[in-house]
Image (cartoon, rainbow, N blue to C red; front, side, top):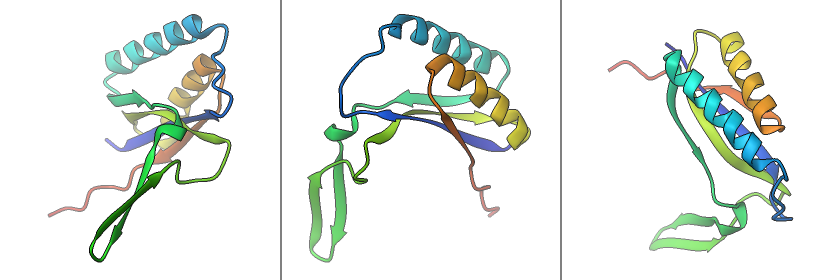
Length: 117
């Protein structure tokens, strides 16, 4: 079954926490349970704020590490789900539930199929 990446983004500069965070997390937990029950769950994770990221660039004689984030933008990825879905349409249905739970937009991208060996 195809894999899809569902990503949530939000403005991370302010450090503000939504006043209804407990309700949001309860809705996300319910979504995660439903993904598992449907056999769609692969994995999910939330990220530390983007300003805590490090950017690593390979150089001919080693690597350079700089403070992140890599992209100079206010909005950064805050977490993701990796799910199984029969189609982009089915993945969008899960993403809509995620967007409602998070009160944020959710980006859906199909994962490239694995190459057969």
